[in-house]
Image (cartoon, rainbow, N blue to C red; front, top):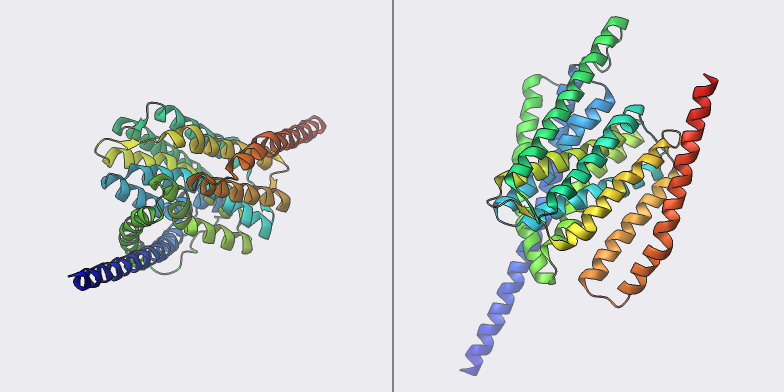
Length: 381
């Protein structure tokens, strides 16, 4: 009897190990499908958009941004439909933090990024406003279906404004005899449409495997789904943005690199979270930790973009290094907090007492200098 019990326990242990291996394998394959699907989607969409003469910045803010945010959309809707709202919310908030701190940080370290005037005057303030609106809607502990409809309505209006603006630019370029990007789309319309359809199919399949794998990983590690959504899922679904922005930086398409990040953040809040709240049976629940820490961090990161973008409309390498250091610190805090590590109090005190105030002062000085240079330049003009 005891021998039979031992053999049964051994078989169950081996079975659990096999299940764990399959779960992790599906998780990795799911990430790979997401990246491949996003690549096909962005490639096909970009070619179609380029063929009608849209500026690189508008392509970055719309086609590329929405295309690379498709993994977040697929994952969050899949998670919300399955009643796993923490992953949906954590995916959006974590992706927005990673987009600015990680992606812009790495891209600026490779080559300083030029920031368009439109981003400073329109798109970044809209990103800050959308982040604050999310906080207001989350104060009652839930992003309900009506809240989601309001958010999704915002992305419709935003996209319409950009399309109208791009048409004005195209008309002006046509009048001057230079239509940007016109006729540069590679392949036929049917081939590009096929790329988009295949990309969407891979995204749907990859998102399902990624969400299922993420839930199992959270169970195996004994950490909350929110933490997994903020870290593993967020970075995994942000890989298309990382690859796109780095590649755009290396090729000199800096408008696409920066526009991709800002547009993705807007799309994540307005469309991804909006649609997730609409399809969820009872909306998307907002954990207390997300309401008191992660969402405020996302807002602070968005606000920090303004003074940095103002500095000569250039993200310097040292500013990219600051962004990257903050993302490492943020991730380290999540790990320490999830594991209840003894170093957490000292780490938190150092961030609150020294690092954050020093950064605030630095950003204030940068903003004051930028406004001073702009004021003197306008006076000379």
